[in-house]
Amino acid sequence: MAYVDGFVVPVPKNNIEKYREIATKAGKVWREHGALEYRECVADDVKPGEVTSFPQSVNLKDDETVVFAYIVFNSRAHRDEVNAKVMSDPRLAEMMDMKSMPFDGKRMFWGGFESLVEL
Image (spheres, rainbow, N blue to C red):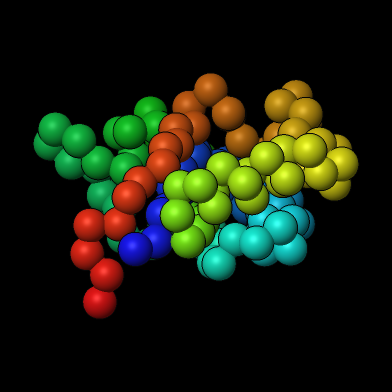
């Protein structure tokens, strides 16, 4: 079954287009190095919950929205191989300066997941 890297990040609403540009470039790099799928999704129906929610998970501010993203791989070994290539790709390095990112990277979270169900 597939292996998935996922992440959630708060993005200021006025930076969505800049974020889209960076995400599009990053997605192309991941795909070129072997990722099976690359998706970045902007919140449409993610209301704050009573205990937890997407907005609460990133301490969302009034002028921000949530982006949920995932990258699909054949396996964890495949993920590790692809990510090693991606992280050494100079095109990605140019985009990784946290000072120029269109979001607060300190409130971003991510992780790798084994598939439990695939239909």
